[in-house]
Amino acid sequence: MNATTGEALAPAKPAISTFERYLSVWVALCIVVGIALGYALPGLFAVIASAEVARVNLVVAVLIWLMIIPMLLKIDLGALGSVRQHWKGVGVTLFINWAVKPFSMALLGTLFLGWLFRPLLPAADVSSYIAGLILLAAAPCTAMVFVWSNLCDGDPTYTLSQVALNDIIMVFAFAPLVGLLLGVASITVPWGTLLISVLLYIVVPVIVAQLIRRAVLSSGGQSALDRLLARLGPVSLVALLTTLVLLFGFQGEAIIAHPLVIALIAVPILIQVYFNAGLAYWLSRRFGVAWCVAAPAALIGASNFFELAVAAAISLFGLNSGAALATVVGVLVEVPVMLSVVKIVKATRPWYEQRVPE
Image (cartoon, rainbow, N blue to C red; front, side, top):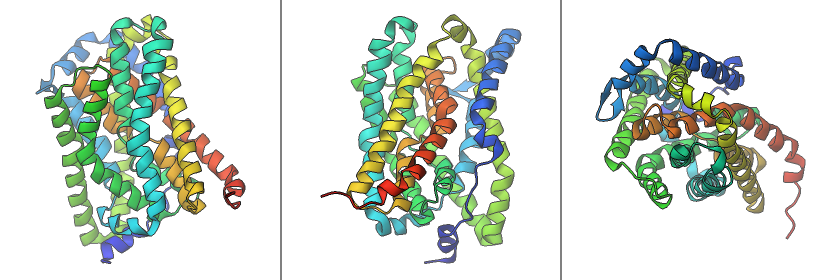
C-alpha cells in the first residue's frame, strides 16, 4: 500500500457543518429568492438561459463543476483495493444502488406522479417529473456519505472503498441505465446530450479531481488536502445554492400556478429513501455484515448524488423543465431525511446485533 492510499484509508472523520445540517432551510430560502428574482429580473434570466453550447448551459456548467469537483476530491480511487475486506457489505450496497434504487424510483414515480397524483399536476410536465426522479435515483451518493457514515460510527475503510467503486461504475453505467429507464417510461432519450452530460459531469470531473488530489497529496500530504477541502467546501455549497436560485427563477410561475407540486414530488422520493435504506439494512443483517458496515450501507443505499442529478436534468431537459424541478426536490428533502435514517440505524443497533434467527 502506498502512502497516499494509506492516508486516505484513515481520513479525519468529517462532521456535518451547521450549513449542511440546515441545507433544507437554505434550499427553502432559494425557492423564495429565486421566484422573486425571476419576476423582478426576467431579462437577466433570459440571458442566462440563452448561454448554451450543444444544449449545455455554460453558466450552470461552471456552477456544477464548482459543486462536484470539491466532492470528488474527497474520494481516493486507490481505496478500491479494500473492497474485498467487506465484500458482503459492498455486494449489498451495489445491489441496492444499481439493481433496486433506479427501478424502484421509476416504479414509484410512475405510480404516484403518473397515476395517483396525475389530476393534481400540470399534464404537460408529468413525464418530465418522472424523468427527474429517475435521474435522481440513477446517481448514487458520493462525498456526503462520509458525513452520514461518521454520524453513525460507520467503518471508514468500507465507506471509502464503496464510494470509490460507485464512482467507477457510474462512469460506465449512468448513461445506459438512464437511457433504459427513460425509454421504459416512454420518455424520449436525447442520447447525444446524455453522453455529453456523462462526459462533462462525471468523466472529466473524476479525472480532474483525482489529478488535483494526487498533486496536493504529493506536495503537502493529507494536511494540505484537508486545508484545500476546507476552503472549497463553502464554494461548493454556494455554487449549489446559486444553481437552485436560477432553477427556481425559471420555475417560479409553474410553482405558483401549482403550489402542491413540490410536496407531491417529494412523496415517492421519501418512500424510496426509507425503502432502500431499510432493505439494505435488513439484507446486511441477513448476510451477517457487521453493524459498523451495515449502517453506512443503509445510508449509501438511500442517498443520492443530487449535484449530478441536477446537472443531468438541466442538460437533458432544460433549466425550466419539470425534470430539473424534481431533482431539486430531492435536494430539499435530502438532509432531514438522511439525518432521520442515521437516528434509526443507531437506535436499532441492539436489535441488529442480536443473532439472526435461522
